[in-house]
Image (tube, rainbow, N blue to C red):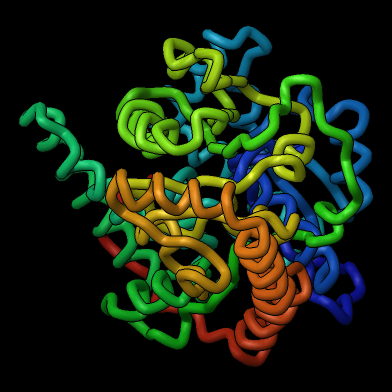
Length: 433
């Protein structure tokens, strides 16, 4: 990648962002924004996103442009629409036809990299949204420094749904998809100069795959604690003794939709036997589409909100009753940032260094989960202690400062002295490895 530009004392990083939203509406969006904050602090950051320009007017555009040298849009950003139904169809087409779209984005990335002396390609959501782009970029630029940024062990996220599916054909499709993703994960570890993982659990998995384990790096899911400390007044729909179930919804078999059903049908009736004043608030993207039938005087259902802080700061506890997932749960990290207690299943707390009874309450069965919720309501000192201990943990291990140190360690390893490009591959097609 030649250029007449004077070399920078910090690397020029091209951050390829398949998802990007401000203000962020959920965990994935929060993680992207915080990664941008971190990379902007330790590099000369150029953002190339597949999100269209019209979504970044006003506050969103100002925020992002203040945190990078450039914000530009990949060719695939044209495959979007302001009409919700059309946009959903186009996004589905982009996912399913990723190998067909990738050459256009990769050609754009190559031209941009040559023009701006890019040192490192940082491919975000590489397994979830961008593997065809990663594959083709590596094929075309075998000597480029490429980071594959993962949100979770995507194969685990996919395959953990299978035991909950009764339809054999659907279960088989899930298993086949999981096997394809496992193959991509193996290729990622072999071909990337660095693979990021959000937790030690994920690090262990990626390091177990064939390849150089030293290329796998911890790049934790974190929060900017300062965003959660200023008191925010409650909105009119916030009620006393409310438990908060935050997430993204959209289909009945999704992790959050399944969790919401379990809470409403199995757990809350047990809570109400002891605390009839307890309230469940289900909030998040598409919750109003898939969970509206659960609305009652004791269950509120709200779709996407401008900010979850009015609900978070005034709830009794956050709930993470996940039956399948992978990665680390922003609901718990955000809860700690706001010093609010959290109740989770074992799987929901996977990858976080929380301790049952000290910084969180853990329960897998409906009765145990209900009992934990009642304990929080009836023991204010316990609730306060859980919130404070979780807050201390988040400040120490899951803050922007932590991720900044981790990001700098990755850069120190791969740029420039640590870079040893993998060998070029042969006998591959144009759109994949």
